[in-house]
Length: 234
Image 1: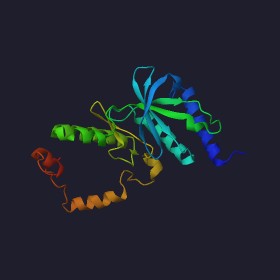
Image 2: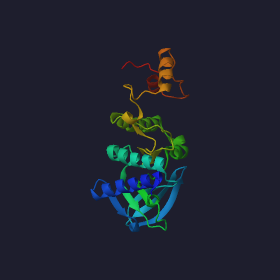
Image 3: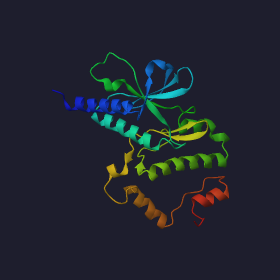
Image 4: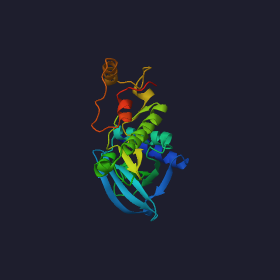
């Protein structure tokens, strides 16, 4: 008899294989990857940089501690990436690869997501390295790109749920929003009509109606300061 976790794992494998067979997802032969190097590690997995057929850099995303919850999130991430990966400020999902291992029982641990590689790493690292040399136009441009990425999610009724500087990547000075494992389709996360509004938003909206505004950062040009403290009428 199969236990529940094994059934979930089989469902995950079947979903991947069917998507590959129907050409919904591109399959990459693992043997053609070279120069594989770990570039980051987190609670749920690791990310590697690799060359594909000795040319382009790609990122390989590996998950460990696979269970039915993780599997659901992986499937969700792939589906979301396929839906929104067209946007220039969202990291692209390219396909799936699989490596051979001695673990013949749980084959889910052999799958990796093939993703766009971001040469400047996370936004946090990028800012630490470059912030002192940034002009206000540079800062505005990064903020605008990130806002465009989030707007794309909201247009598709998706909320990210884990937006911070380590889940935003930078490639050739272009923002790339990433890591959708915690993202949810709005209709899956809530049955309410006001689906993009969460509890903390009401508190913030109330404070704004009472006149609260952002404090001006020293040396901010007036045009930018007027924009974010709300002196412009739209």
